Image (cartoon, rainbow, N blue to C red):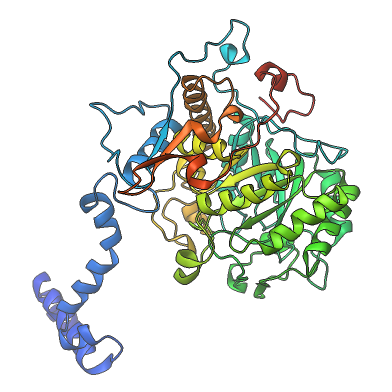
Length: 518
């Protein structure tokens, strides 16, 4: 034995390397048959797989130019990071965009910008920018709600996101005076850190789920009574990443904490079906909205990605007939989002936000229903110029998901579906989650929102308005194509936004239904 140990200890390090490579080569040639490249090119073939695995990172940091990447390019990410950190987010030497590119946005400035009066609320807080409409006011809900911010956190559930990420987002919206949509994973303790909450449920009814897997009105009523932070309820019909498709939460990912919050069993796969059990048609959906609103007293809305309009038109007709309906509609874009989805869905099913929203809003406008509804846009709108376009088209608020994630550290690694998020945001790995500094990241989310609202207000004032709700379709132009280079939104999408009643930001500031402001 001593002789063997002595012999091994005399082998040089480079000989050990050669031995290891010989063993790998033997394994590649004679044992494994799954990978052709490593079989045909033993040892060297592994280099190809390694380079392929780091290809996205190499392209992101060294190959792609500043405006090239998707879903968010380097300039967009840089603006969010700098805004969140309160760093210089300006650019010098003029725009590096192609101003003649298809769908480039132009906001028409007025010759003399809007001048803030001395006693204006924005003199005290240049980021104060609440929603111009009160959610639930038309339907006379018991607890109407005016969002204190025009930008808010979109639906992202605990389970999809880590506990530390959810906590950072909620504390951040509290500091920014915004609201936090729970996503369909139920209301977790991490959603209850001071921020206003919109409780969202989908086909799985997590958190308000009966033993049979359907919606329990009693659980929903109890949840809202015990948690006054819940200001509204949102029913998810579909989402941009995968409209009309359910999902599976593997049992291996269901911890006791997630099981308790979602109302499911530990270690057992949970199916979210493609359709709802609580209703099967538009009429039943409308009835459910009224039941929930009457039982909880809260405004109730719906969320959907837009494709065919027939059932949406049916909903509008029932609203005209009954005088009732959803208090808000969240329109999600087919650009996808944080939810994992097959490429066939993410790339091709449902319309991009600008096409979907314009089709839906035009239909509701023609029926005279737009004043009754608060419209919320969701689909890469977390930038002031895009928000101005959305408000000109009829939006009253916007929700952001990936932009909010980036403000708390997301690096667009695009591995949300693997549970290996390197930033600790879209993972249940305790080790990776520990990298999220909640106090610091909550400050950054709040600062991103405040910077966004400040710049959005400045764009609004440059256009001659006091509040973004005053934008209309003629205030924004887009590049269309080579033969008809530039048009207003009105001539492009063939409708005019309904004028929003507005009597000044001071009236919004004094509103008794205004959401929480720190």
